[in-house]
Length: 162
Image (cartoon, rainbow, N blue to C red; front, side, top):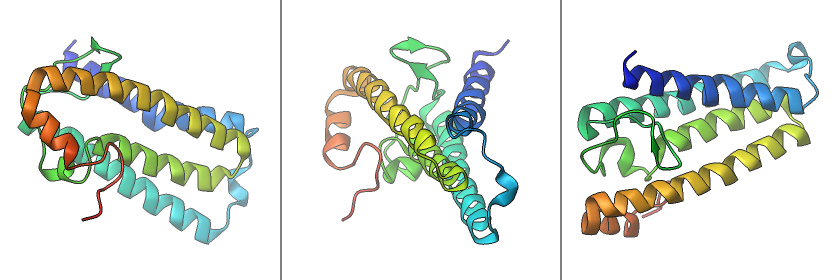
């Protein structure tokens, strides 16, 4: 099986299906039929924006960076990028794929609206922050000064206000 495909499949299972499902369970499996129309519209918009940003980032990473996003705690699941990306979605922040996932998960939080789901989200952010810091060490080794400059001019997850 193609390593790229495995990386994409793992991302889908973990971030698009798995974490929202854990959030749902942590919320006590609420009845989603009771969500009002306005909340559903907000949830759908955040899902489209978040998943759209993540997909754009993945496509950009494949086409420009020559690699795949799934690199877990310094274990190469799929081929790593061979070019530093600072434009396109990577001009927004250093981790636009995760920003997209977080936007999507905020939509899930709005749908579920529970402390349990919020705790899952906070734990996800903490774990991903550790993962990203490990990834940044590797990127510094791979791209040196160019990556150092990119770090100075961008934020890890949020867009930089100029």
